Length: 463
Image (cartoon, rainbow, N blue to C red):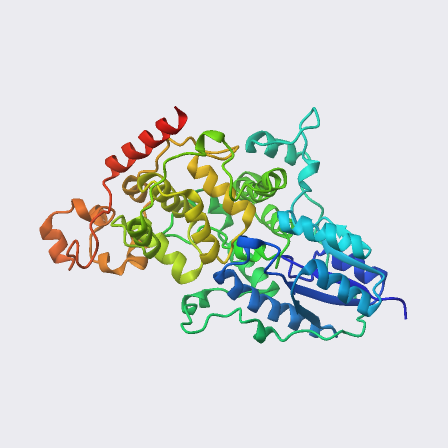
């Protein structure tokens, strides 16, 4: 039998449309490896919510390999050391992996390539970031011209099926349960039962979305409706390839209806493009004037925001949904993030880290791009003086049902006042069983005052 080939899985936990797996399977018998490396990412080690997802995703991938006669070898430690160690132990002819663009992933690749033959493949994105270039050969930093250029390469190639595989003798590995990825004492993951991690779960989620994808452009902004795809956690850990999603949507609905969603897939690629150019984008403002914003140290306000107790129902609904399910509606993410960094004038990196720990779809590129976009500090972002007005946003996007679901103490309020209980007539509050300051908090900051404070801080920073 020929020498084995090691397939190194990372955030690409699938068998279908996996170029590295296809390359390894063509070359010889395969050994599949996943390394849990908590050191290389530093303070960006995988957060608690996504670790829950990872446990179930690895279990699913292991079952899928077992059904084909193989297995998934698990090791914990420095990937830069463990991958060569396993490769040399099995006499691997080469290590095969998909290219990822987080700074630690690029550092791991460089280290592994110094020790063994490393074959890297495109497959985590629609197109390699460095392939989307301006006319003069430079990299794009603004989404719209970047998107137009990306479209010249689209559609991406059709997804490839799971390859036929022969499996080599396996080295020893860890037991998944020993990694302690699942929460205990307490187990806060009860609300995560809405998710089905793994490749089969991703396929089922895509099928569900395709039934409503024609209405995505309007539905994605309405938190009370199921208008978004909810594929982001599956994409974050690579349980389904982005080109599989692209072609499924493009094939299912007319081009004009598909474009808004395909454009959102483009934003995911664009985030990787920015991270590839600015590896510290999760920590450093993209614009120098935001280096000294005079952020407040406000632990009580921060805690109220984290717990969904700000007195702004749409913000509170979003933060409670995040804590309970590990996910938040995208429109509400923008509103909640804007409230923290502008109304409360808390450092955007504090909110970014909270999301990183709580989101099952945490992705460094997308997470940092989103927070810097809201803050106004990114290389492509909304102006800082665009301050989301949470009360009017709540009414505009018909969030009454969403608030009733996640802020049940307000459920009996009529639509006309549920967005702003602090402005409701006392009689209406009494009839709905709402006592401000007791059953539901009063607003922790006045909208106009918070906006004025934020704009004053911005003016001072610019000066």
